[in-house]
Length: 305
Image 1 (spheres, one colour):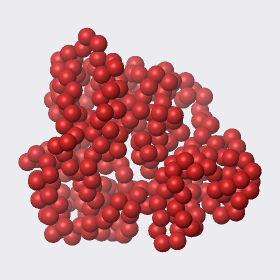
Image 2 (cartoon, one colour):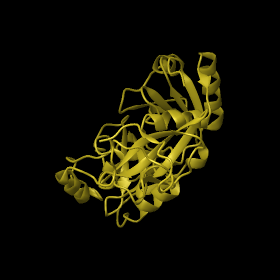
Image 3 (spheres, helix red, strand yellow):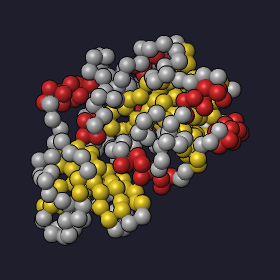
């Protein structure tokens, strides 16, 4: 993909939940992994963990008002997020409304995207904020390297935004191209690459999606303990090879020893790139990997600890 040009992707978000009620702010603050005590207009990325600190879902939380929030996710489903939240609503005045079916999405990446959004919408969000205009929400995305924007709204309004972006020079691209670019950059998607068996630090999310200073939230004690240990035993890393694109959960080996598994992969021509969860204990970074015990070692590690 040539990111000297704007690229546009259409998608359906996995979740859009509206959270309201007199206790909404305090409740979400005690459940989310990053700081939500920010003013209206903020867009905050973070995770929903279980008691063991494992990842159940990820979200951007958009604060509309003192006790009104939108919880959105690209791939984590509304059902999973809603179940996770409802388990901890006891006597809290908190209401959850699933609006996922009403929303469509666009992802805009590449040079000049911010300038075009400002021309079309009258404003462009700063990092960590969102703008809202004519029923459209825009905030900084996480699925591409460099500047990119998630654009959410009703189908009709978003179709018009798409037409305007194409007139302004954006090039429409498909899911396969997006996946190849995302994986090549080592950007994980929850729950595709990281899920209920994984810790945030194993996916490199400890800096962007975990707060060590905000106080108590579900999974916080585990996060603090892991930070003190200073090292995870597994890590999500980029690998590359040639031939058929491997499927998720395929094992990776060095010699006869299993060292990890594929989480997601995408191909371009005869080459493929994949995100793999690899054991830092068993992995020899200097050696290539294979898809079978004792098989051809023709898969290279793109980046490693």
